[in-house]
Amino acid sequence: MFPKLKTKYPVFTFFVVVLLLSSCAGTNKKFSKKDVKSSQNLIGLSFTEKQIDTIYPYLLRNRKGFDSLRTYSLDPNVFPAVKFDPLPLNFTQKPQGNIPEWEIPNNIELPNNRSELAFYSIPELASLIKNKKISCVELTKFFIDRIKKHDAVLQSTITITEEMALEQAQKMDDELANGNYRGILHGIPYGVKDLMAVKGYKTTWGAAPYKDQEFDITATAVEKLQNAGGVLIAKLVSGSLARGDVWFGGKTKNPWDTAQGATGSSAGSGAATSAGLVPFALGTETLGSITSPSNRTGITGLRPTYGRVSRYGVMSLSWSMDKVGPMARSAQDCAIVYSVISGKDPKDPTTTDFSVGIDLNRDIKTLRVGYLKEDIEKDSSKSKDNLVKALETFKKMGIEPEALKLPEDLPYNSFDIILRAEAGAFFDDLVRSGDVDKMVEQDQRSRANSLRQARFIPAVEYLQANRHRAILIEKMNELIKDYDVIISPTFGNRQLIITNLTGHPVIAIPTGLDKDKHPTSITLVGNLYDEASILLLAKAFQEQTEFDEMHPNGYLD
Image (cartoon, rainbow, N blue to C red; front, side, top):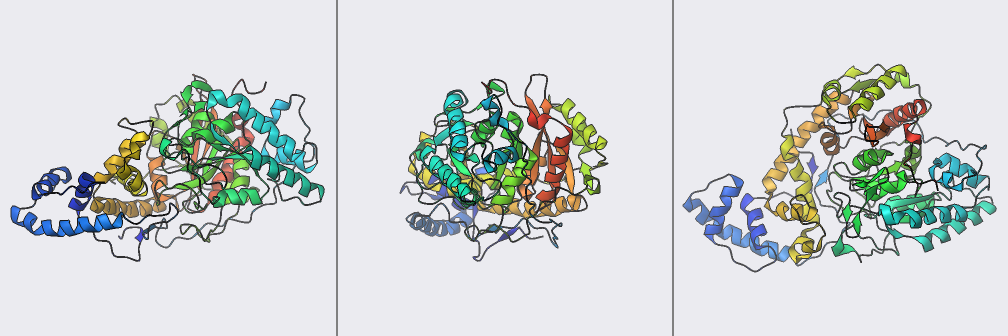
């Protein structure tokens, strides 16, 4: 079994190199043979004095190479020559159908309480715009005013893109007046996580060292939404460098309980969508950053297959794990946004030509569904009751799920070094410059601390972890290839780390409230490049339940 990494350059590595890089980073400090000997204790290897004598001159040459390497700057959008490939051997994509013509109802009226617009679906808002019952400018101003009214408490927004939004909204009104309707997102406001570059506005990555950063490009996913007629009204909070819900301006709150954080790192996208400050938002996930805030704030979050949505113009945390996806109040709204933002992008080498389609008219009884029986039975969280009830709902819908178990006998405790090593590479300049000290959080679990310790991850172990990841990819494919959907708890098992490592798509859908009146969710896992099946089943579930129509109190005045 070979690692799922492709490179056009040979890889040379040695464990001491990484340790010496760490100890001498940002200085001209010499290292001695004694330093080399001491570093062995950290890595768990031992060489003789003679061997160290032989190694030492080689390491001195390496150090000169490192110093030379650091004199060259790198654009944030440059991917490594080493490219992750999520495909198992002999992979065949499941049929996807076509992108549907989204149905826009004609019987939607403006509510007497105008605040109720905040919780209308995308098709309902599209109906009002298409039938000229509200203008794009009016709708844009409505949502911008909601941000201004509620965000002092929620802290979900970093930048309101008001000038650009009103200009785009007016353009959409003018086009509509001239008979040019771009489609279901024409004039629909939205927000994006502030990891995504937007020309003319700051892209802060939620972190103090970058709070004045601005790029002269716009992320591909944002461009696609703009071209579809969407109106960007806000850059929403990312937890600092894509970790948690704390950013340089505070802590993003959960609209259901503002004593809680919204969790991260797509905290702003979750909170703003949940509170009706935007109809939908884009988030990113590396290891739970769409799933977690969707669960906490009671919305629907789709994390597409790795490489399904372009990351051009988006901050990298882990080149081999990052994904971009929609966060909305329903699976149908997620499907609409996903159909626009997905697809091949020549600016992002991880994107693919696999077909994109969603057949929402397919009979759900034709889906073969599995469920993680033991994980559900062992769940000890407050969401357990709703988890069990959701499973019963699926059965009442005619789904007969078969019991499955996630792959075992793999070094799960070591896989996080993949994310941490890649993040350490992307933020190399931040650590060496000392600007990492400016980040708000500096405790043991902070991003700042994680970036510092990344210097102590040997390249050998990084590659070994990726070799085990290749085995995980094959085992996960063996598990899911004969199924269309696997039903899983959202948290409390290994599903989240496995699917983020293998690149499988998931959708988290709300299942009600727990005893503390906090939202709960369940997760549907799909095959690679088969978002269609999980969107279909999630939509069908939401048609049988009302959980996606729930919203927190205090946002209708």
